Image (spheres, rainbow, N blue to C red):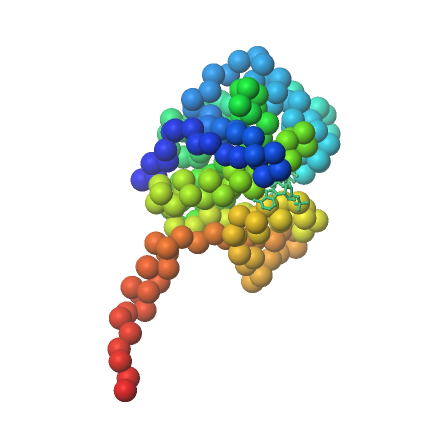
Length: 197
Ligand SMILES: CC(C)(COP(=O)(O)OP(=O)(O)OC[C@H]1O[C@@H](n2cnc3c(N)ncnc32)[C@H](O)[C@@H]1OP(=O)(O)O)[C@@H](O)C(=O)NCCC(=O)NCCS
């Protein structure tokens, strides 16, 4: 079973070197100010268009949507099924989020969004997320971006995800980050190489 650390981890902004906190959402209370921070970011044009336009039927992302997301995040941690993190500024304001979407150790998809007001934080958060996932026992993570989403593709490439060209489909490009455990397993399956003189 996956057992992801519930501790907060420090993450640093690429441009400003300011300290942020990658915090499991199970540690965060669902307050009105958190809900309003989430709604405000999720209504930012770029994030809304990519992630929420369809979900919200073209209407604004509301506090009710935010509450549903926080409750879903808490249930994921409580049941060890999915793992959502908030990225908080040093003053405690939510600025971004990322998650591991299931507990399949072979491969789990990740997701993320980040406020336009805090550029420079999400790649470094995804890099840390990858380290936490490896420590928890995942063998690989997968990121999926619609073809046009170049900003997201750049996040994955900077975080050492490798494009999986053979998986590309009509809508998405796929990228994976594979940890040593999977490489070891593949080597075991191949059998020990024998010396051929
Ligand atoms: C995709 C998204 C999270 C990217 O956010 P972002 O603020 O551009 O991402 P970063 O903070 O990692 O990078 C911003 C800039 O910082 C720099 N940077 C950040 N971390 C860096 C690092 N470790 N090394 C080098 N440069 C870095 C880069 O210059 C980068 O700009 P570039 O991508 O134009 O080259 C954001 O656009 C978003 O929320 N989009 C909508 C939701 C979405 O698409 N989610 C993903 C679904 S698959």
